[in-house]
Structure formats: C-alpha cells, structure tokens
Length: 102
Image 1: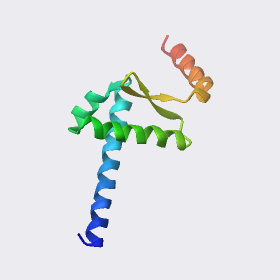
Image 2 (image 1 turned 45 degrees about the vertical axis):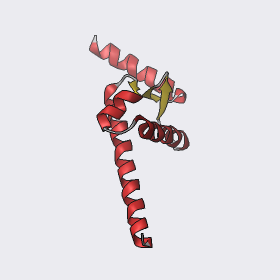
Image 3 (image 1 turned 180 degrees about the horizontal axis):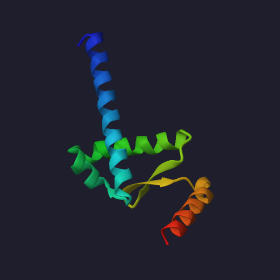
C-alpha cells in the first residue's frame, strides 16, 4: 500500500468514525433515556465492541471540551445529561416552563 493509499484510508476511517459518533449523539439526544450498548449497535449495524470504543472516546471528548452536556454510562447504557454546574439554570428554566403551562 502506498503512502497516498494509507492516508486516504485513514481519512475515510476518520470520516466514518465522525459520522457514526454523530449518529450516536443524535440517537442519545432524541431518546431522552439511557440507551443500551446493544440497542445502539443494532441501530448502527455495527459491532458492540466498536460502538463501545466510540462511546468511550465520546465520553472523553465531552469531558475535555467545555460543553453544557456530557455523556455518561449507567449500567451498560448511555445517556446525554446536563453538567451539574449548570443545575441552577436548568431548574430556573424548568420552573418557568412549568408555571407557563399551568
């Protein structure tokens, strides 16, 4: 394999990985509840081992980047949650929305 072929393969793999991570993020966001590794893997038509590797990478990425949410693992299931340091803002918003709906 030439150097160019290797670089093209690496680029395709990174692109594919990014696309799958994006799909995982979307599924977790829409779900609102923890999703099992098995369910995520089935929906992605990927092996649980590969999906688990991506989820672990995503957990680290969310921790390293200053974001309002993080990805957590609960008994083999995964969920997007808000960071604890923003709980005051979330509580204010939820109280406001609850009063408006009454």
